[in-house]
Length: 91
Image (cartoon, rainbow, N blue to C red; front, side, top):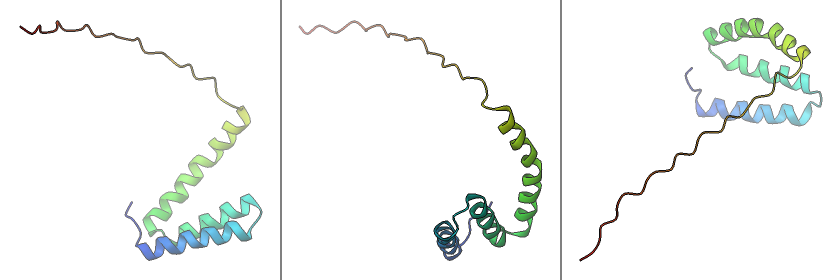
């Protein structure tokens, strides 16, 4: 996606800060910020966001209902020691 001009990026950043200061409900904040983003995105990106939102929405709810996934197992890498090369003796 193409970057937005600096002035628009500043405006969005300031508006997001204003929304976070003035709106106390987290869901309402997210909704207003999403609307702000959609207002400045190109038409193709807006359509892609809507499709993505519809596709991801129910899956996220299912994940939250199922709870945290299985624990990740850390695998230790074997330590490989390098052999020292024979040192050169001074004459």
